[in-house]
Length: 468
Image (cartoon, rainbow, N blue to C red; front, side, top):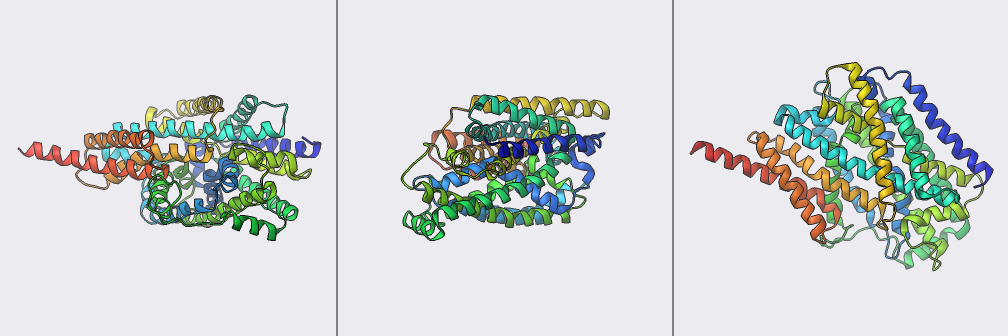
């Protein structure tokens, strides 16, 4: 890598480490460590939400989707569900989060179903998030290995993981949120710069002609085929259920809302994020079409996730290459370690001793980071799209969790029926995922609907037996 590019990357990593040290001075209590004292402005939370759900996976995988053979803009159909779900969360879910002094969303299950359901939901979140973010760490390592050719993927996974552990350990959720604000700005600027370079090289007219000839600008597919990943129906229905689960019942994102001071601010942040998400997905997909026009019949890699890193490493001018690599590193630093620590401390261990809770929180942050490094190392031989992998994992686990939250809205459900419903939801969605060809956007639908249906049936059977 050229000296100027290297300087830019090192400067960004220094900024991350410095942010951890700066915010670390304020991390004296779990309230500050986990919810930033409810003192973060809504616009910063909006940027954090976008950065949290974007990450390196979007930056790398979405262009690869449009570049790949048969790839196009159909991924945008998921955004339909993203928008619908955000409106539901902002109007229905958001007031729940601000009743009392919540640290995690799973505490809401305590008053309705008791400790067992809360612990199960929290445990599923910890496992899912550890695996998903281990994959994200691996994808960033691919980029570093492509740019710094003397650095192998395992070394890059470990190095990135250690930086992530350090700044999250020191600065808590406050450092994570503000680094995500910087992250969003950096990778948007980087994506715009890459777009300008590619358009300059290929010519906008040539790009549009090549993309149109290959069907790259197709957006809608109205076929009702459960085996197709991106259709209008999987986007509208599956995308809604997926986003209700990830943005409504997943601690990783709900924790961001809790960093504001009131539900109105959190709702404003969530709705504003929808606009930014749509714009950035269009931009990243268009970069994929640009790469298709740039390479044409010369396929530089066999895996779609690696085409953008290849272009960055071999074709970007000095300075810009460093900026884009810094943007990708920035996206990797959207850490879930604080959310995992908050979930374990608040939902699984629950100690009233504040000093012990803080010590345990920091220990768990390190342990979660090491676990994500291990996942990244273990999955480095996979050739599946990282975006598909992560979204599938999220849908697989979050569907049953969403189901138990919806089940809680019914008056008849009990702790036992909720556990039966979740067990059935996990079993059915696992069978659908591993034994059928059903596309992953439907996993959250299957998991949540099964949980609600079986849980409600179990409660009705129990009532019937009690009255006989």
